[in-house]
Image (cartoon, rainbow, N blue to C red; front, top):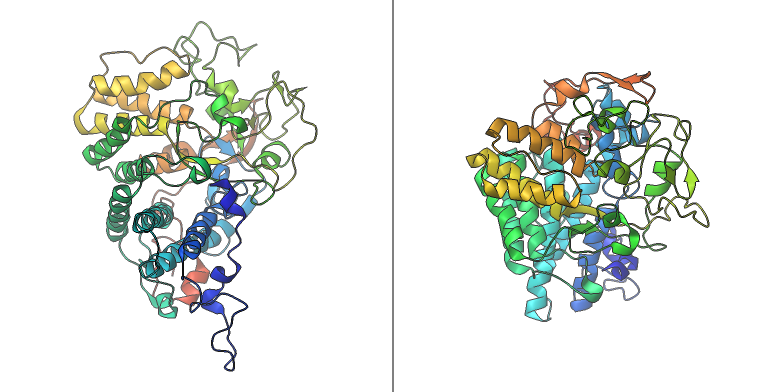
Length: 504
């Protein structure tokens, strides 16, 4: 799959804007709607262009996945990169945050590419099995883009046809209508996709990816029984399993392992990302002590309860996922010692999703666009956690919930979950486990919003590792559970209604 990312869809990307000479109705020197969509190669190019939309700087390229963490108690973005800090401080509106404006357009760009492919795929003479698979991949990607819009903005215009000018006048559909379409697309995708891919096609959306995304959609909207069923379907396939080493899961050489359900593909120099330079140099999304202090001790107790905790050595005897995820003072990273002043904002930096290892000094430090580690959009540990949460909420604790959680605990070399917990007690364990297992993976911001606890955990001061106040945050529960519809979108389409609390 990675080798396809170098394919530049110069003609495809500009089909809707081509200005053809009236003397040359069928040009042969460039792609148009008339001379594209003719064969299998064109169909695959259209599909690869849709995958390519995922690497947009405001979606899963650049540092955007991790800046979402900085909208939660997990991390801090001191520099207001892409306008994320404006959101974290509750000062955002429909105009003053570039991510609010651009993420809308980035998702619709991907939707437009998927729709264009789906609209033109039918008549292309090619192998019907391959055509069915391509359609399934396009539906999965369309669902993914719409799901991001739904999570952040609520109901949005539902566009299912090839790009047309009049679509710019569509009103917003309801959140329920968007969710219904997402689930419809994912059901059809799951029925059309294989269990796995090999060789050059590895990395494409699979049946398991469609079912796992379906589980996430259902989980986020509290359809507990259905979410548990979808997650269990992925578990029952037997295609995915936990990678034995939590730190090694994020090494470049282990990309595409059996834990990966779906990832966004990068390959330098064709399509790189800037994950490393943003972590280590710009400190755009650095972990906060609130997250560090949440990691349990190796006996399974908190730092306030465990006799193993030593304030003079606060990072010792901790859940091993702490040092696998976060660069802490007194440790070693990229072959160099980490001091209390190495990372000046909070004292910490993110290790997960860096290509560097603790004890290996790199020949050169990577600059912008030179990292190429794939971003795991869904991995199997998340499937297990989704199953545990949904099953517990649907019917309370049972053996299958404990089994799912303890697989993750065992891999992390942590004690199993205490038995005999009530539904409410196990809920808190699951929420804690999600935060720790998936820290730094862009999910906690969505979690605190869907759990409706954002106003409880976000209205607070921020501290560095020396317990000094470095900033503050504000979350308005009557407004901030959704982002505003971008002002530029409303200017172009005045029928779009604004979300409550953001004016007209």
